[in-house]
Image (cartoon, rainbow over all chains, first blue to last red; front, side):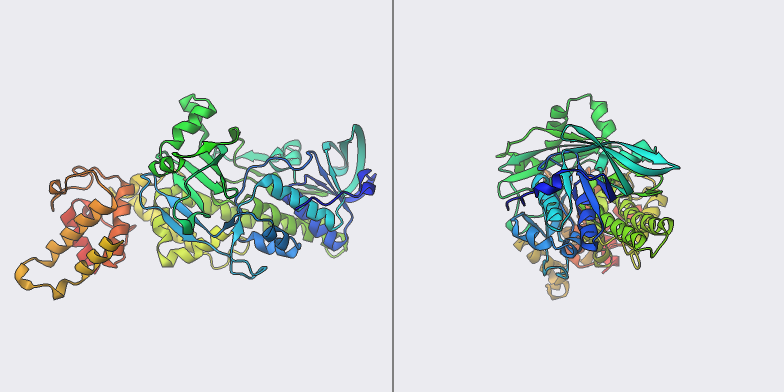
Length: 434
Length: 106
């Protein structure tokens, strides 16, 4: 797919806009798509020049709905990204892996699969798509300040092509990802003390992907340490992303450098070791710290936080892009209400905050229960009475929690195990409070 | 996969077997539990070392993840459902104890 040529007229930053979107990743680009479709004046300010690298290559089925709404699903489907139809959990013993099909119900675009995406290319395509819908996108545009009056943002300072611009704006959407531009500036950020995880990953060629029918699935290889696991994600026919996730304390305790840490853990799951026997690493090692956090507020006078800029949870269920684009949709819808004079801003933004929090908190609840019983998770996936709802959650259907009872049932089981002296599964539970 | 389905058929075809073999139902269940234990967990043990009173944790050296793997194997083999969260630790003491529990769930 060739990038859409940029129209020269869009190159000069305006002096004023209705919505300044900070960041052109999936959250910012999707916000832009919805605003463009609603005919609301806006600009996208992206500090990088795309394509640029980003972690988080695996999508969930719920994303099909949003991509369909913004007219992107067909392009995505035609782009040749590996199709994803499930997940395989490989126990720490390496024996008896459990595969589960997790497929969307073809409601959107007739697709019963989602994708693994090279994020450099995917993010670029999505931002280009916003431009084709009429979004003015400025790359190499670094926002380095805001001016407020009476607690409300009035303008943002933008470095673009060697000049400093002041862009007056009515609203700001912070889609700056884990840079958390406004969250840090307004001191909204709260570190999550429960999940101080650390990820180290690289791309490989020649990784064994196991049986043909599950070769396109994401693989989660358990490690024999609490909350430790390895992702195996197909990037294209030859390339596989392999990432080690552990507690940061585990990394610091061992006093290793990233290379030694990575090699050490890759050797700890026998099945994973077999799969890497013929494989060659083809990229540098990258690491991601600065793990889970939340924000005291997701909105304020004139601004909304979307995607990773609003919340970051552990990536075990590939929720990142899904949260980014759903929050973008919800934010754009509320902005449209305010612009149309249908709702007062505080009420509309409050509704956004409620909607966003409900979805992300369900993900977070799921993640906590999962880590609590990581070794037992595939047992429950085999049980029809648990499986259907777990698959709904794995799919990313978290924004309408009505009827989701499985997490409470799992918590009840956990309490029974914990309260039975000498229960055989007690040592399999981690110390996470649920 | 062949060995599992054959074994499952053997495990469930209790009534059709020749009574002159003189094996009680519990004995057969103990044999099946032992088979699943050895095959599913790929234990590097001499099968002769495992007997009805072998204890899973102390003698065989299983951990809770391995016990869970065994439970999955037994559920598949016997077509039963363990109430794992509500189980009594005593049921998981030895091969014989677990075989009794399996019988109680059939």
